[in-house]
Image 1 (cartoon, rainbow, N blue to C red):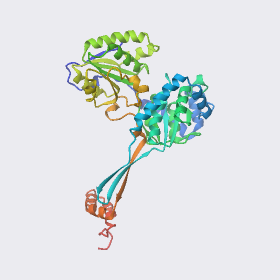
Image 2: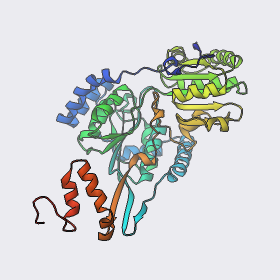
Image 3: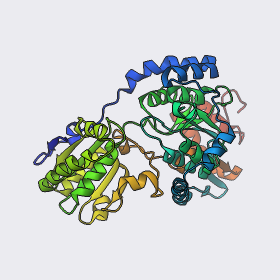
Image 4: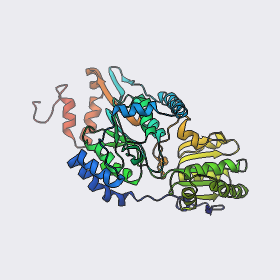
Length: 437
């Protein structure tokens, strides 16, 4: 069901030997380019036609009526509502502590630099709606944007034929619980293009965030610059670093939980214990057979993107997981906190037997929109900072400028930019080219 990769005794860079999901965004670019161009030139009519072509339904309107959102909230199963409200509460607690404050640095007497943190004006939030329904992704996108102070939020999610061309009711209900009233029944690359260029009632946005399939990712790459983006989300992935103290039942269940997302989802166990590896493999066989989505999970676990990686010891395992840079990394070892402290590359880290990735997906308070495909070595997950821009405000007095003016002129002349130096000299009546001596 799942392959083994034996790295024991190897001191080589493990990156080329580790399983990884493949996603050819470049190939998808050429397919989404005409879609985005069509939306740019024809607006809402193009979005509706493309939606009908790919989703098999033409919504009566791109924008979801407010009373439909209200109805979704009113009809929400009380247990689901309670779960969503608790997830929202916890996410707000965590993200509220991320909000930065303006800081003024007194560089010299009379000279200050203030860093102001200013939210993006308008953001488009994408919520997938393919094999699964993701009201949790509404929370993960909306909460940090609201905490950051974004003034205008719009959500797009694919229309569902089973729900009259509207996004899934759970997604609409999550929007309603968060106070988001601008929601569009649009998915795929056309949703990103709608956000970027505007269409119908949807005004252009400054930034698009949220996970999606390869077509959404390709559109985000294509339109980056026209819009800001959070990241290029690829197939979900979990890595579990575990030793012989880990419970194979837990490890197998957690590998399965992420494989459930998609046939290209990646589930990787890194362990120095051959006994644990064997026990987990046996548990996978037993647990997968009992799951609802057994066929999908089996394909993901058997794919080249998943595997059991044997290492010499936990330190070797740390080198491997740092090289892999997983979206989700579980550490199930003796003294897990100390081991996790040595991890440098991961989207999010989950410690010990009672902090599974599923908790982070829904109700830990952390954000589940995380870097994939090894991007955790240079990128972070979605947070309040994603929606903030740092602006430096420079305020120098005449004396403070005079004190450093000579250095500025020297550096300007070194870079052969004499007009830069002249802008300083002009303030003090110094000699400049073309002026009287």
